[in-house]
Image: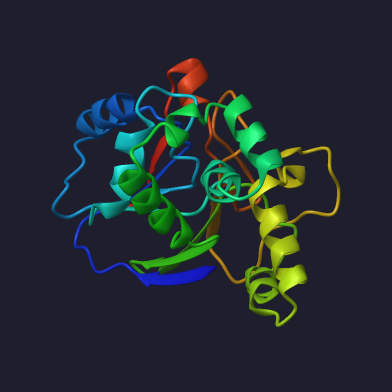
Length: 222
């Protein structure tokens, strides 16, 4: 559930918000910013699929060297929908029809890829440490947050994953108790649609609702 990546690509590092099947929009934005597919690295905060018209193409990005992503709740819906009728119904109500219409080989290929996606991604790049989580981080310490995913109690780990993928509390500035997350330079999150990307302490929320608004946020981290 945790992946630590020392970025060995020689170019820039970028963070991108929820794609939700907007493959053409992503490609157009990458062209606009001069993204170098041979040198740069793009990190997604999850929810590559559902709702938009090109979920399959967005999921196939997982096989590209220039692209990494954390698990989003919509990738989790793909996984859980295969064995849980309640989750499948939820998935279908939220844009998941494309997944169950795939040929069996493709369906299982994507399932295997989604199961390999980390819930927590830590990227070391040019002397800084960046964290990526889909929905929420409750702790004000990155190391404490990661420790929740290393417990022997599988129920506790599932609870931590549910909070990370579905939670939204930190994005609301009115919720007290949050401060800068220690032991990390910045944390990037998606899941909750915001009008403009914004920063709360050192947490940056970058889901600007690409499918609904046509606005896809990409942050240049240098």
